Image (cartoon, rainbow, N blue to C red; front, side):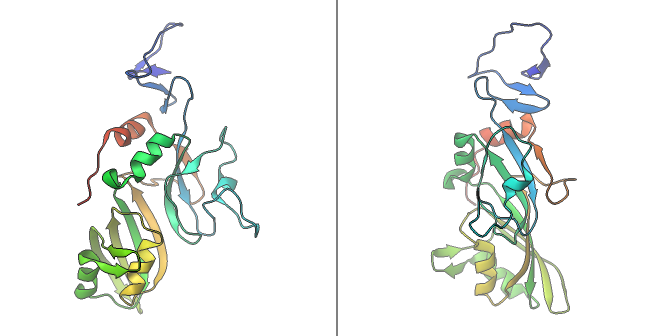
Length: 214
């Protein structure tokens, strides 16, 4: 265990929960609750829900070893892959999802058809959807071949099925969608279905940063 980055060498050390940072095995703890912060590399075919009436697998089937229930920070569709954060810290999750502090999310997207510069410009300038204008912070073509295009997109909003709806609206339905980053966090060496606890520095950074819409 460490307090403010220093190993605890004597028993009975008093800490101030409001001021001191307490970590165990690199994971930030609150003094009273020992809250959990998890990054999962979600595979396709798993629902982000606690249970499914149809008996389909959920991300909680991949998290059986954790000591108690956590909830997702945002959502990923059944066939969407990649970085998913889960926690039992409601305030921390709310901060990440709040419109004033919305974290940047990066996606690798494979779409039907060959995208051109005009298509990319439409994504960044804004696409009109049924729930309002939606635009990408960044839209970059990475490759185009055999009637498919691979893109990198960054978004700061969190509308439901946003990437899929935007691409479909400009005539390029999504074939594959992977969220490769969330607020600077990536899956790293995690294979699909694997997860890890966030390190204290990662939790602290996301707790303090205020990400403004751009």
